[in-house]
Length: 201
Image 1 (cartoon, rainbow, N blue to C red):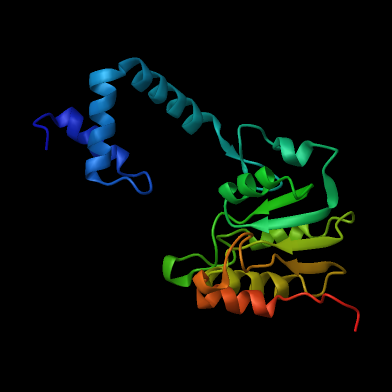
Image 2 (cartoon, rainbow, N blue to C red; image 1 turned 135 degrees about the vertical axis):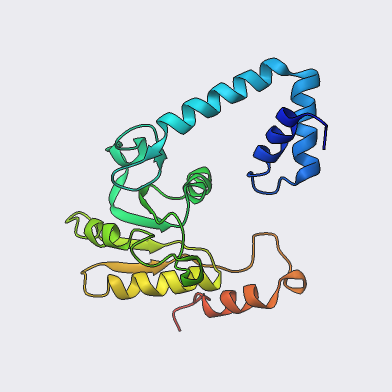
């Protein structure tokens, strides 16, 4: 405790960030107050604007200050492919890879009954509606390779089973440059299960 209620409240507020404990939060606060008050004011203003103006895209549910995000409104994106991800951060990661040029649907979570997250809470009704798009040909399920992510992927496959769509799941396995002896058993099991053929025999 610093002895100042205002400082202590700011330290406690910063602890809402993932991975920020009491010591890290205290260092951030002391840095801003001692060395960068202008940076602190700018951070506070940018946070205020973001909290007031950023919402969710009406089509894909990604974070945006627009009604329809730039990815959904971009006519150069491939409307025949829809990639389903758990979080907006997943969209950022895939976009940085430059390996996908289709559209997205963000679940904003995964199935987790213990956390009160059922199909309705993660947008399954909206996904079912989105899957009725006549231009859509393939749905790529890119949920995380966790127990909850796999359960969510299974639910999506059941939900869309009667649609004339190609359903695929992103591969999980050995990272590029990785060595087998350092890879955990779960990752190896996924890699073996998702193996691809090298010849036509």
